[in-house]
Image 1 (cartoon, rainbow, N blue to C red):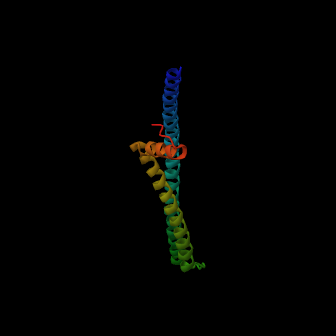
Image 2 (image 1 turned 120 degrees about the vertical axis):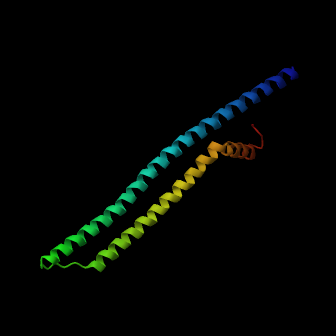
Image 3 (image 1 turned 90 degrees about the vertical axis):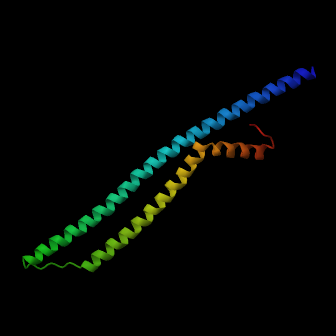
Length: 138
C-alpha cells in the first residue's frame, strides 16, 4: 500500500510540475505580448513628440519669416523674438525630458522582453517559486 501511495505521490508531483511549467509559459507569453504592445505604443508616442518638436520649430520659422516680410512692407508689428525663443526653448526642454523618460521606460520594457526571449525570465520564475515554497518544481 505504501508503494502505491508513493507511486501516486510521484505522479501527482510530476503532474504539478507539468502544470507549473505550463502556467509559467502562459504567464511569460502573456507578458511578452503585452510588453511588445506597450513598446509599440511608446514608439508611436515618441514619434508624435518628435513631430511636435519639428512642427513647433517650423511654426516659429514661419512666424519670423512673416515678421520679416511685414517689416519689408514697412508695417509695424510687435514681435519679441527673445520671448519666442525662451518659450520654444522651455517647451523643447520639457518635451525632451518627457521623451527621455519614455525612452527609459521603453528600454526597461525591452530588457524584460530580452529576459523572456533568452529564457532567463523562466529561470527567475523557477528560482522565485523555489524560494517561496522551499521546493524545486522544475
